[in-house]
Length: 396
Image (cartoon, rainbow, N blue to C red):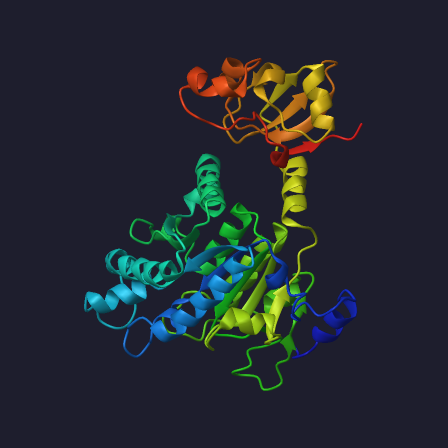
């Protein structure tokens, strides 16, 4: 592809609004919930294999600043294998699966301790969450992980997430933390995802090989031409190149999340992005909430039906959640987290939603108060059968 051939078309199709990299209009500054991904090459000195503590302290200072202005933060951090291999005196070069798993087990402790030590200086609680591919692909595990992240954020903690390399095999792993970060952003309904990397954004070609490569500041739509611009990673310790970042962008923008690729090496990388440092923004077509509603309405095949009374039907039309007291029946074969149709007294479909309970449990709690749920099903679940955030009304 000729360098620059896409830039002109991109500039013509770009929405006419204020630059998304300018403060205070930056998506990073205005986001309610932010996911920040840190690559191994930034965290670990490639010459010594030690933690780059001086840089990490400036990142943590940026995270504190986001927290002080009321933003919720999730950190997706690589670096466990890179740190652990030094402690185990493993040789340079590619590692076998068992060696990677051993290095991850050793390095993850050191990585988590560093974040805990630095963030708790400001009385911020740090939580460690290790995920595998199955946690985002299997519906029940996805719901459990989503609930855990939401609860941690509501309680004021910063979740620090990494892939569970100690147990993940090549068949069941993300393979890079770019896509893991995008899945986390999707799972948490984040407004902004920042990939701090060894590159400052997307170019029409590899700038290290092609002096005519042009920088692309915004990508409103990910096309085949954008895919063709992907290049490999320039670092020795990272596993993700530009191709994985574009794959991550597809996931993020599909979930209504802005995504930024930015150079992470300078100190205070997040502050630099807000100040207008060069980076590439991938722009979503909808907000996280709207994207999730579209997904519920159009992408999920209902596994059953929940029948409700007239009082509950009126409550739904006013934007309320569906409580067990308003349920009069359930049919089909659905489990917790499955999509269901909500049917009114006249048999008309009123809404599509994600059930917080299986059909068997819905039948146990229907017509009862939310305070009785724990006694009836044996565990403390949600107060709602379907929360309003997990429901889309069907237009009459």
